[in-house]
Amino acid sequence: MFQRILVANRGEIALRVMRACREMGIESVAVFSEADRGAHYLEMADKKICIGPAAASQSYLVPKNIIAAAEIGDAQAIHPGYGFLAENSDFADICRSSNIEFIGPPHEAMAKLGDKVTAREIAVAAKVNVVPGSDGLITNEAQAIEVANRIGYPVLIKATAGGGGKGMRVARNDHSLKSGLSAAAAEAQNAFSNPGVYVEKYVEKPRHIEVQILADNHGNAVHLWERDCSMQRRHQKLVEESPAVNLPASVRQDICKSAVRLVKSAGYTNAGTVEFIVDADNNFYFIEVNARIQVEHPVSEMVTGIDLIRQQIRIASGEELNLKQKNVPCNGSAIEVRINAEDPDNEFCPSPGTITKLCVPGGLGVRFDSHVHAGYKISPYYDSLIGKLIVHRPTREEAIACMQRALREFVIEGVKTTIPLARKILANSDFREGKFDTTYVERTW
Image (cartoon, rainbow, N blue to C red):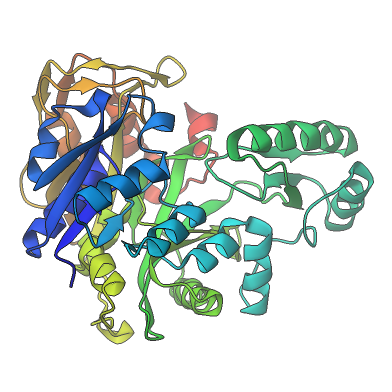
């Protein structure tokens, strides 16, 4: 087991990892930018090292700065959290080349699955359903039109790299396909330095279902059941829950088994998330793998009782999984709401500033993962996530009631937040009945 781990991230996820380290008797090294200097959450670490100016491009996204900090801090491993360098296969390779363990998958598996075209090929080989589409990247308009006419409009143009909805366009005819190709490629180049795109069938009003997996270096892999992340806006998730509502038991079993089959086929280890879309007839299709811990991992922890960060650390240290699939439970219902410093009444405009008042809800089954406090300054340099409010109760109906009560208790002053929208979602009859999809928020609000 490691004696000291460097946490190559900030905020909520950095604190989450440092807490796990403390409970495991492992020292932690925190890195911070000038913008985060003096943040209270850094006090959880055993050592703190500044890695650069406020801009992420000059601090949290600079591999050599992270490696230098790990060497200065005498860390044996690096936990990347999510975002920043978490899915950078080159960084994973650099870590291991520097004799520092990367707490994540092998860089080879990360590189293969990080490219969506290659990931589709792996899924097909593993007999996992994929959305009908092009065989590889689209190289010209004629090829795109041929594919679209073969599989039928509407189609989705997708960047092969990255995520978050960037490099994606829906086309409903030849004209919009031509214009969408160039726009998607340009956006992908700007966001991921990779203009590659492919075309697949656009599934109308899909649900977004993802499966949490764990795999060790000894050939063992298990799933921790599924999460429904369909309540989202422009591909940014707002509410997540486990188990998925209104998903037939047979489909649930098949989708979870497909996820395990795929990661084994890819030679993937550590924690990861296999993402699918599900159509109105409950047909499911693989879309991508997130090769890291997810923002929404707490809902899987709550229903299974399994600490995913601890498991990541144990797997990276070479231990064999201490879990068997038959012993992974799914108890009750867990719901997570993301609380962002954004104004939902003003196109979700970021709302940086100082939190002047903070009253956090509590009570049975309530968890709040966050690093903020009254007096904390929300920086304009980074993601606007304030924290994640999670509830866990025996049934979904009880979980919804618990979340509604917790949201009514929640008070944040000084910045705009997404709490008012979360209250609307939880009170919505369609949400309560499970009648929603990934486009529901735009259609309704």
